[in-house]
Length: 136
Image 1 (cartoon, rainbow, N blue to C red):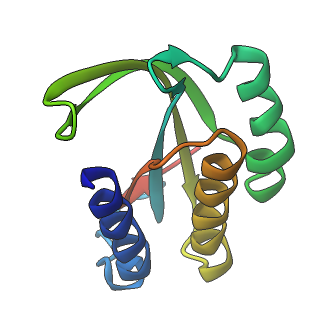
Image 2 (cartoon, rainbow, N blue to C red; image 1 turned 180 degrees about the vertical axis):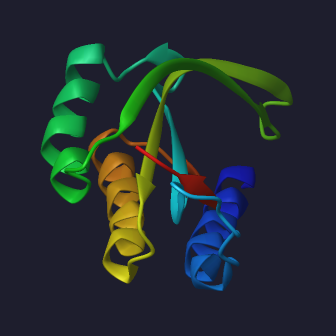
């Protein structure tokens, strides 16, 4: 149930991205959006998404939608499983993407989330989007 509520909150937050205020950036930085996606890798109580499978997902689904670049970091996350009354820890992947305000790319985040959930039988992918000042 908590995961369903979190999924709803993520969907609502993605829709609200258009309302994020642009920061006042100092040159050479420019206002952009930064997104972090946290992908759990467990299926049930075991590791279900291998490094190879995740790398294939990045190559097939994330990179084509964000060809300008991204960063993938190994992570360890945790969440409270209310149904079982315990804290669950799992290995994960954190993907960071920076992009210009663009409705198509904001929509692409939602596509990536839904594809991952279907492919790897996941209930939730955490997505955080915020305005940033960025220079390369």
